[in-house]
Image (cartoon, rainbow, N blue to C red):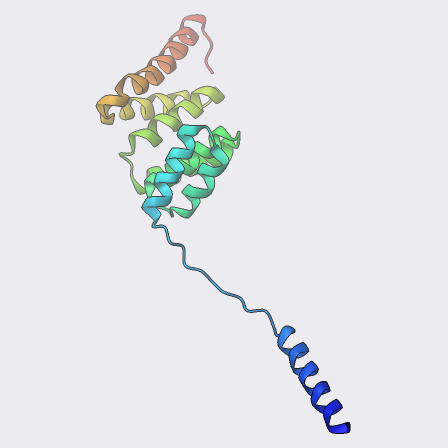
Length: 158
């Protein structure tokens, strides 16, 4: 009987210890490529979900398109300072990114500062615009020029 109790105690202890093993940490590889994250980020922007877009564009890396996507998401979330920095970072990597040029110009126009720079950015965006975006980029440039002309007529030197 003593032997049976020892065996039972041993089995119970073994079962208990097996259940108390240390947790295992598993690191999963991201199954999506940066391009796939960028596609998801752009889709989230289209759906009006800038928080999801920011996450996906963050996962897309630091290529210019991903940076522009991230900046757009930040802008839509109201974080204009970080959006401006991110647009500028995108433009350092690709000075011909018409979307970043236009959107930074719009941000500056909306903030009513650096309108000289905003006009130059918008003019460059118009010159590089893909056909389907040309009217939108021209609208940004026209609004900046209209504001600057109105200020010049009124003697406002802002």
